[in-house]
Image 1 (cartoon, one colour):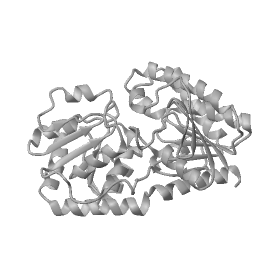
Image 2: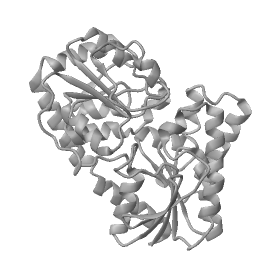
Image 3: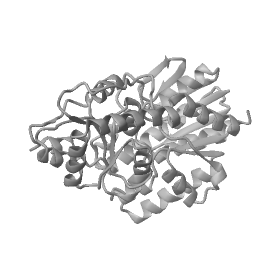
Image 4: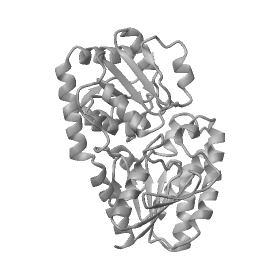
Length: 381
């Protein structure tokens, strides 16, 4: 089967960001399928058997895309959608088209390619757009909101199947009028071969965060919690629009080592940590996210600290794999981290449970097979 895979932010393990499209695509290739990846990463090349077609017109990494103003971001997304459409309309003919968002503008090359090649479209929803930018206050124009919601509903209708990355996203897609039998749940995955569970390498109790530091990732509570816990080391690795503000005036026990240049750096930081943070701004739609950092935490065998009252909280509490803290509440975060610091047995137990959860429910191989089954069904294979 020939798969045309459309994803603006294609990242391998050597880069920074989510590697889902790379990990899935290389597994599709290993199963004997052909994969042509259209992305913003420049140049035409072959990566682990994946034919990568990099086109100009947009940001190639999500951090850079979210660090600019929303109007400029949307212009860049639209520009990439146009250049990606041109690439998607060139041969060879695919058997199925797999387009992943955000941004929602990835629907354009997906729809055009589906029409051009008379091939089914499988549309993957990683975040609920346009609901996320609307609730974040980034998309305020009433006409723009109506148009974005119309595009969302249109692409869902024209897609043979829709893949959702969390139960909340699945519910959001269904609320837009998509029959539930058309929606497949394929969450983010844990790279079990990369992370090495075991005792934390740092002698001092270390709390880490690895990921984007944008408007949606409110780490101010972590910085304030560090101020309340001078004997706990906080390591915040990543980049984004909010990083300069967070660094300014942060206490001495908060380290900002840099954005990270590879997945291996995340692996090393997790290995040093007693617990890992998955924090978001207190906005309802963000509770539907399926964040890579949470599944990396599970794979590393570390207690996960989450602040979203939804499926993330349910995952850590139901499996005793971490703790829930109230969003934006530095005191609650400090109290929960103090309890962990003073109870090494709980840290070890939660970390063991986190790894077991990753192995049981979120292995990359199993979830890639689930996604491939959706593609094969859409293509009639």
